[in-house]
Amino acid sequence: MALIQVNYVSAALQRTVPLQVILPIDKWAPDGSLIAPKKFKTLYLLHGYLGNYTDWVSGTRIQRWAEERNLAVVMPSGDNAFYVDRPATGNCYGEFIGRELVAMTRRMFPLSEKREDTFIGGLSMGGFGAMVNGLKYHDTFGAVISFSGVLNLLEDKANLSRRVDREFGEALFGNLEEAANSDKNPIWLAKKLAGKPNLPDIYIACGTEDYLLPHSRNFRDLLLKNGFQVTYEEGPGGHEWDFWDTYIKKALDWLPLEDISLGMNSGNVK
Image 1: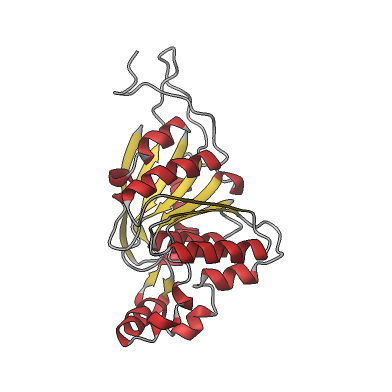
Image 2: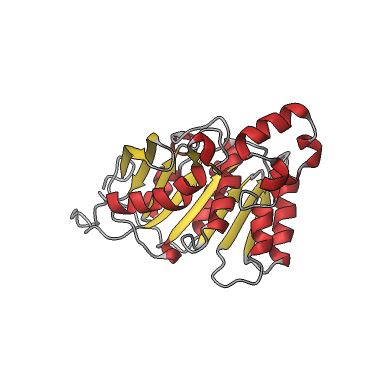
């Protein structure tokens, strides 16, 4: 399994950005021969608030499971910006995630260019970012995954009425009322896309002890009402890595990936 550190100059963010890429390019066949390279199905996987591009590898077993399923995983840094565009500050994270990063990594690595082979997911803030950009760029992503997503962030009037939250929110989203009625809001996007063709399949999971559980349940109901194909799961756990480690495995089982096949590695030497 190749775990690759990448730094490149992003036009959308106007600076050098880091990311990690899991690429099962070095997989051996049972007879000891190196399996020929091919175009990989790809999951763009987003971290949560306070995290960075290393979180998923250090917090879960995604590297092992991606290798088993011959899945490439691209993990960028989103800082604390919720993966939306703020052109005035040079922080076009939506453009970065939904368009530029996909194009750039396809130039760098043998990744499939098919929509049905291209997925986006994330946890918490990254669950929000995955849903926003998965819906906004639905012609690119065939499936969207949200773990413990803060999905009704721009609908939470109680929080937005508190001055400290409003100042913070406006730094991220601009005018909050305008943002709530724009493609920065996954709820607005879901309603706008109702009845449209080519909608992505959706997977949502949240822990039963997670304070964001109402966000996931409400958004599930909204998607179903508007004609989306939704797989929804709850299970024991809070807003924590033990839950996300369990459910990233379930999400990979849900995605249309290859059957499990083991290559030679330090845990599989025969």
